[in-house]
Length: 190
Image 1 (cartoon, helix red, strand yellow):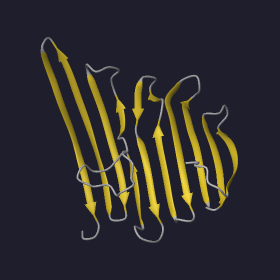
Image 2 (cartoon, helix red, strand yellow; image 1 turned 90 degrees about the vertical axis):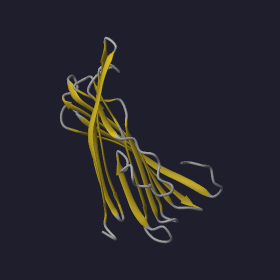
Image 3 (spheres, one colour; image 1 turned 120 degrees about the vertical axis):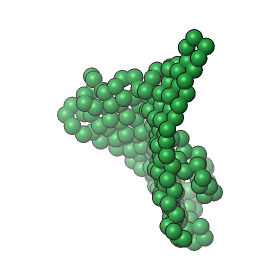
């Protein structure tokens, strides 16, 4: 994101914000403005939530993100991923999101994917692979119970879906089951 370029300069500022007393939600944010031969705003951030308290964080969310506003190319890119996040101290939360928007010119449009896309949808060029938002409701591979979901909006579609999967094996037998749904609504033509 920071390739050296002759005639470009970076000016930045870092901020740490906290909410509640004692602090339960923090935002670490770095804003950098690149000017000279190109004009871009680069945003690096981490949001951390430890709820209901720091000592007993039943919900621990850590979201790392990178954003880029390119004024020369009229585009916006934001990527984020859950890291080291858990529910009730042991159920791992994973997943990511990506946003791409081109405000004018060829390829103008908008794409937001939280947890990915419908399996029958071909993502636009330049869109990264986005991992499903998921929770593992067991701590190992046997038994295994996972739930995952996604939600996506593009200039012409609305997409969402969810899936739950169960696997267990013992004494030479195994059980595997899943249930889920996928919805893809195309706006034009409907």
